[in-house]
Image 1 (cartoon, rainbow, N blue to C red):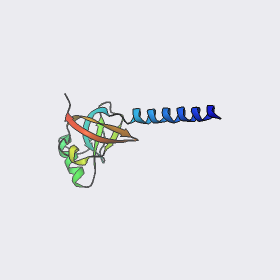
Image 2 (cartoon, rainbow, N blue to C red):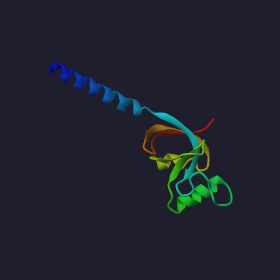
Image 3 (cartoon, one colour):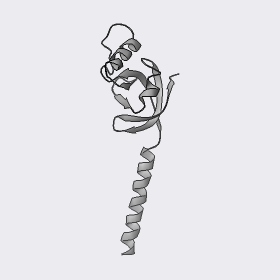
Image 4 (cartoon, helix red, strand yellow):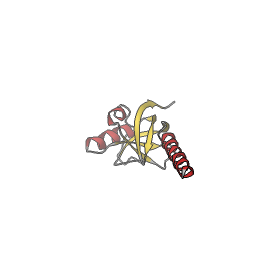
Length: 108
């Protein structure tokens, strides 16, 4: 019986460690875009102008990764609003396709 209790406790500890590891902040590099256009802006002009116009119409700021394959939702729209159309590095935790933003900086 004690063996099962120890085994259960060990499994709970491992599960807790894996959750803690997945919650560690990561960095993501890409461009601040909008949820309407994602990776490719359709409006003539700059990426910044297109992003601002789409957000004005109700789209949300997103991060379009530099590899061109993924678009991430951003939890902090206020921080993203400071970088429309710019290449940035976002630090935060990923949950599904949403980044819980800790910081956004201009990419180097």
